[in-house]
Image (cartoon, rainbow, N blue to C red; front, side, top):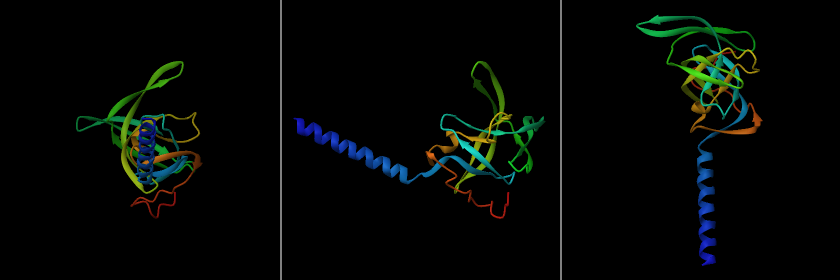
Length: 171
């Protein structure tokens, strides 16, 4: 009896380990800080990878909220650490209530942006935030990372954005 239980446990453990290695082999390993590229803005930003955040967030200055074809839109500007900036207009998909310690939640507009990290690009929901008290202009959350990346918290800047359409962008 003991040998059957031990053998079953050992085989189950090996199968779990094998499945974990196969899943890891299909994902890009990234560090806790990475360079990302925002498509339309043609800007590269340093981003903090945050597996504790559901969604991504970007430092943005909201210039104007307006209506287009009966839908709410927002015009906002983003900039990189060299003060290169871009103005973007996007439809507001929804508003996110961001929880804060010892303070009331903040409502932020959520838009869709094309982001490239390593050799993978995705359209992803991003909330527009003041982020003035944060060191990094961009925070990448789980909704972008899911199924594509493994985060190694000891690493930084393990990849360079290489998605189609960004070559020749010197920023």
